Image 1 (cartoon, rainbow, N blue to C red):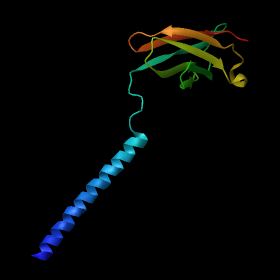
Image 2 (image 1 turned 135 degrees about the horizontal axis):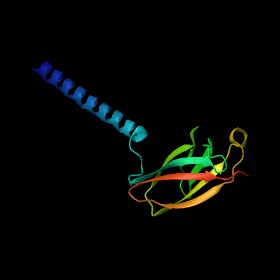
Image 3 (image 1 turned 120 degrees about the vertical axis):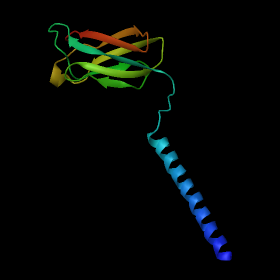
Length: 128
């Protein structure tokens, strides 16, 4: 009788430790790779950046949002896409960081108001 009780106790303890181990692993995974700490609604701001004189897309332009850590660089087609926390308006800055590959363009600031959680922009930059 004692061995049956000991065997059942071991099985129960094995299940408890297994459940705790699984729960711990899931908690660590959620903490490292889970949802963002920002649970607010995000806004998607996307668009194209082109040269004002040639109307060609500009790659490597840094697109940033004032007072927010996010930034993005335009790709080879001049396209950018950036997410930001919900706000009434956004002050965007377009800067040419890489002068060697795309020439030299003057920085531009613009203020936009977003409706329906998304905005699409066409931005033209002047050459320096």
